[in-house]
Length: 173
Image 1: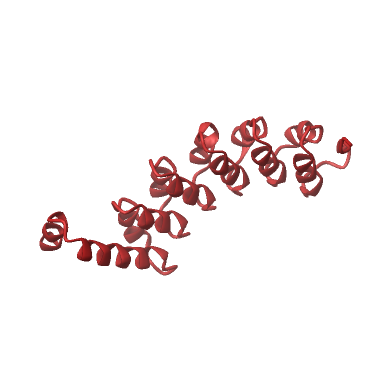
Image 2 (image 1 turned 45 degrees about the vertical axis):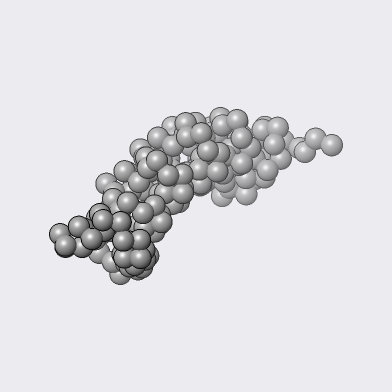
């Protein structure tokens, strides 16, 4: 292993690509054990980290780290993994990328205050994802039912946990 690291460090691009391709293949394999995925979650190649973040066998502590990765594609992959810890998903509420906030708001592991914060987002796509999440509280759904964005109201209407008494605002013509 140390010989490979030395060769890798010397800058052999062909070998570097082969190693990254191999690591990516291991990271996407649904039978890869968690300890190996934990190692791959620290790979220098962001495509390997994306694959590890997408794998359901990746340990939750690694997913928590991946949710804070510098690369947006890695953070999106972690936000879409249903095993990403709730507190890590809630930590994404202030991320500057709306698509990432939308993915985190839709994650079935997003709960409580994280969903309430996503429901107050300035982007309708994020509020809509929060409105559609079955973990969104009745109180938050009631507030979203009066949202100016019809896609948000549609999310509330389609959410199986929307209380029967909630009136969905009409579309403005």
